[in-house]
Image (cartoon, one colour):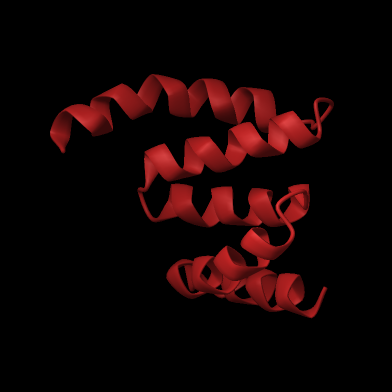
Length: 88
């Protein structure tokens, strides 16, 4: 919980890269924490890491099928991901 609070504080301070760095080991240890994946997805999206953000949102949706915004985020990023992949 402390790590999630730290990541949220970093995200709120627009320190997304640091938030992701805090979240990655937490999500390896607790891969079923939807809130952690959501925080990561939001930060990754703001960092322009569309493919990774999509994967995180898909995980949120898999863990929480009734999540209020995950379906829309997944759809939006699926439309954007092919464009990003084509630029790589």
